Amino acid sequence: MGTITFLLVLSFLVFFHELGHFLAARYFGVKVYVFSIGFGKQLYAKEWMGTTWQFALVPLGGYVKMKGQDDSKPSLVENGNDSYNTKKPWQRIIILFAGPFANFILAAILYFSIAMMGATTWAAQVGQVQKNSPAFQAGILPNDEIIKINDTEIKSWDEIGKTIVNSDGALKFFIKRDGVIIAKTINPYISDSENMFKEKIKKRMIGISPSGKIIKLDLSFSESVVYAYEKTLLSSSMIFQGVQKLIQGAIPSSEVGGVISIGKVISDASESSIIALFAITALISVNLGVLNLLPIPALDGGHIMFNLYEMITRRKPSDRVFMFLTIFGWVILGSLMLLGIYNDINRIFLNN
Image (cartoon, rainbow, N blue to C red; front, side, top):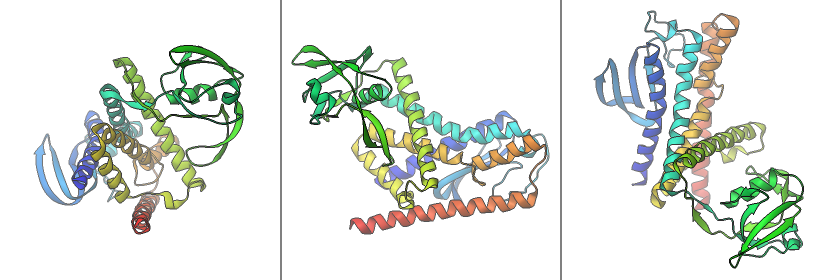
């Protein structure tokens, strides 16, 4: 069942990505020959609106084959008003960007659905209080519920950390204890901590940890829109930073995951709940959008780079350079895929 869910989720993500390209291409009058979910041998196909819509044998991706644009033939030229070749560079950039943008839109839709169904988070309830910390000295106790910091209403644990980090000086905490509201003034201290990439950082803290109590967020329609926007933005930022840290060497290459890891994560999420499945699908969708925008030839970001070059210099890269860089891009992508699969297999053997 997990494998079926994985293939369905992956096909859905690929469909949405390619639909972005397809709609933008058709908007600018570019003919689309093929809209494919999967690569390789054709399993099923139907002709509709001048396009062949198909499922192919290897369901690990997809593509739209436009007139005048074919990744397998980088130097392909086809003339006519309905050719990708004849469109202005800015129009081609929009067609290319539309795929990743569709992934961001899909992620936002999924996060919005999660918010409407009942997103959950840690309650703003204190679990442990570190000895001799500012919170300890102010008299904060386990099970205290933090309801307000200065003039900021607090609904979840995340908001506590966000408010502390984004403020200066002493803070006035309003605590609910045994049904009574108590005010406490706490002066955060700068302490050593770690970010999500396990890098050493300095951070304003008061010395408390969450109780682990889970609450359901009661969000209105407009609050759900804001929640979806913020979660999509946060996920995108996190993945961009992750790629940057990987390039810098802050994250070891052994952390790169492949299709096996993705499949396991989706399978586990599907067995947990529909909300968990939506959340991991949204995260993978953002991941797909971000990675496709990297300036690697053969990816959307690489093609965007070529078109930006044409806009600036008023000339296209030579066919030889274009072909070389595209093949180089495929080598990079192939190497990353093999690295991910190698790491996945390694983890399987280490866990057994």
